[in-house]
Image (cartoon, rainbow, N blue to C red):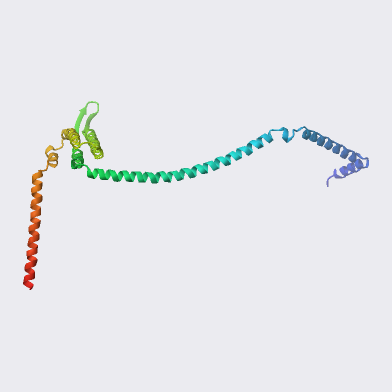
Length: 252
């Protein structure tokens, strides 16, 4: 049981009886009123919305949003145009490349045989040069490092020669699309081969092996071989006819 509870109740009863409670409530209400008036005064002291930068910011925000919409629409329009032009460019490029490639193939097919032969011979020479790759191993000794091995090769020279052969092939291929006179083209091809052969032979390419491939064909011999082949075909055809006639006569 709390001994102070009765005293507290008795105190509040006496205070109410004497009107102290009402007086205290009035003072509290007066203080709240004063505080409310102070807050209202602060509210009245605030600037109006028109007096702030809000209207200008609102207009700027609206303008920026409109500019964004216009920019997005311009982007979409530019994107559509880019895609349409890309398709058009791709199709036009295919037509252009196809027409050019077709004409180039036709020109190459009509090019002198010696250019085609030269290009093929250089390809054969490239294989011979590639087969010339060599490396050597040499034993070494020093007081500081002891026994060791020194490996050397001609790989760099082989690669350099093969690159020159490729460049020469590219030049000969380009000549098939040039209006160079055959005599001048032959002279240039001869110069190219002289340079390539010298480098290839210096690397160890068998001169006889490559020369045998490039040995000029005897035109007269080719003609005689063709005539002999044609004569043999005629004889074979005649013999087949006689055999068929003989077989028919036996059946009769």
